[in-house]
Length: 237
Image (cartoon, rainbow, N blue to C red):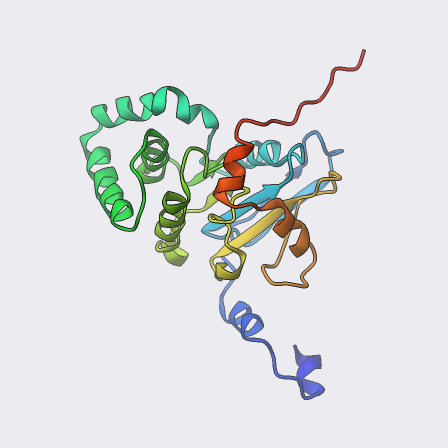
């Protein structure tokens, strides 16, 4: 930025905002699991919202699970939350009236903003509103949610601001990861299709990895057509 100023070029607003915000301090470092080759992965300045994105088979779920293992007091919320239309979440709410009250309040806000009530949404909120873990890593956060619900949910999560506990959201939905709407309290991690080490990607056109992130995203309508598709590694004798 000093060099740009010396040439008479004004700094971009996004660069100024990055300098004005102090680093959060929270960080994590570990050796990457398969399908990588054990390269060291470091994530500094963990944001309240971090999106993990990549194509099928890129390793994003394995990265998310390792993050949940390595971050202090973290929990991984997998797709098994959807079993039985969120039966586990309903049982949890029946046993915890305080949690049910918080979820009912959030549900009312979300429905007013266009969300549709469902077992998938209740299961998410049961984890989001619980305070038993400092960090939450959520596998395919959009699973089972229609577009209006996804939009209401991400707006709700952004409302937490800089003080919200860190959330890692695996996603391939453009309704959840709306690139032009990314703010200073959010970050993107890309798992490249060629299994190069995951990296942070700045959310503006021209940034390294931006186009790869954009090509991984699709609308909820398109994502619904590929729901349930998984990457499978053949067994080699």
